[in-house]
Image (cartoon, rainbow, N blue to C red):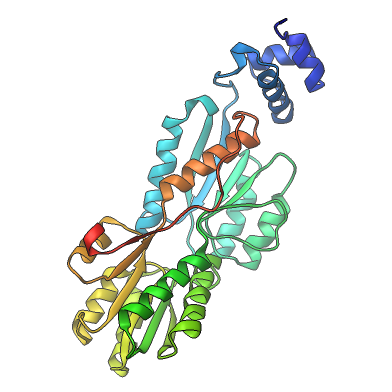
Length: 337
């Protein structure tokens, strides 16, 4: 069987032979669209030197997440920094930009600013009109935008990678109802920002399961911590001070330790079931001490890997499309943490 030549690839990809030569010999100077077509056809036609090469042009991807003072976002940052080293064959470089969830206007301006200098954007932010407008304005062919961990509605072409947050909330509701038991009681829900779609979906899923299966359990307060751990503790403190009927706390965001401190000060930890998300080192310790009952964890390392796979496939640097964009959750209790 005759081996494919650069001329064959050029014809199939509708480019010149010199463009194929520049791509396959890592000389750069080729547009992203043409580079993608050349690599795709070189692989389809089984040109040996195109199968595992590291393409020359570095693609710069901006990642907009919260600072590592939020431990979960710290794990995501570590995973993206590791990805810069672990996948050299794709030549993707991720740069982290920290955003304040309470300042959506600043995030919107950053999105607009970065779109000119980067070849794609990954963002984990609130579902806010100014941010939505900024993303809509930068959408264009060949420019991927990924919403990570929490989605944004109403923008065509955006790709979501992360857990099914409504399902995660339903799991939390099922566990809460079973652990509280038939007696039931009042439950506090702590979210970071309900404008963050993932938090809204968790709260909705949690509420729906209690309504369907545990009628003796009642949500007495939905608190927004603004993603501030200290504020989460303060808000829970206020409710516990005025309502001795509280039997459960579901924290869908930051602030596990301040919430634990509020419980220890104003109620018996044995009487209140505490369920939260994200298995950080601190929360693992609290779980082992019996101060948290359940942690529902997502896997930021897997979410970042899916992001790398998606982008590599999008830009024609990986043949296979990634697995499911919806990543799994896991349940941790004292005995398996």
